[in-house]
Length: 412
Image (tube, helix red, strand yellow):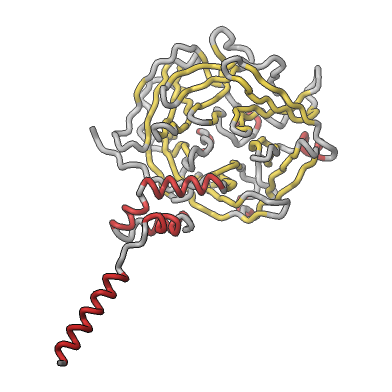
């Protein structure tokens, strides 16, 4: 009798265990995990093969990025002592101060330029001094959210000047780096592309470019502006940058387009009335304005270098080379502050506000949100970067955290 009772008890216990061990629906697992902080997800990947498999599942990583893109953050970078420090904060809902969260620091040399974030990843250069005292710069891609970085091979070229842009092909889900090299004098003649994250061996390959051009140089060393040496932006699989094209190599730059999927170059003619800013603190910048490529620049009075407002150029039709122009006269005393303070354009918000930031961190760091419809400016204080006083700073809008882990590189 006793044995029977124990057998029956064990049988019931076994059934309960089987019932309790039923797997949780994968959709529910995804829903739970997408609520975790990125750093927690990065740590959980190391717990077991099962955790790594679940967290690297494309359904999960795509769901996470979709949710992250729907609630993007502000990203800030500050160079100090050979390192670049990354911070982020939620986007402001009003003019209340924002407190940043520290992510990671990487050995990225700002003097070599840093590209804007693309789907959560950043392209830059890691510099060090060799035994002969020469500075050696090697390209890398990093993910500030997870703290990961991936070194890239150096470009094989005998040329002296290297220009790089970073973009993403949403169709094939591939990151690509476009590199152009040239001799000290002359048009860029070599064009190379590196594809990242596919699992194949990382290598540069030459591509054909039938369009003689060279990118517009941003002389930020002369002006003191902490921004990429070449200002490019990726929108919907197309990389845009300003460049002088064909016979107009000495004139005002056109808009160069590089289709990342097909690796083809084209260009859009500049609009009539586009002027080069000269002698004005606020330098022109390419921005994503409600899904369209646009250009922000200071509006200059006729026959002078005096700042009179902000001008926004929006590309309406790429095939017809049609642009729309909007000029905004900023209210005093902000007009004088913008003219006298060394600021830079950050971009435009999803509501259409034009965002500016100081180039250097002083006693305080802040963002200015200019609303063209109300002709009003809101100042949002950014707290948590006081240790970087007097250092340069970058601010980026719409930073979406990404936990996609690039496939490990294998040799062919």
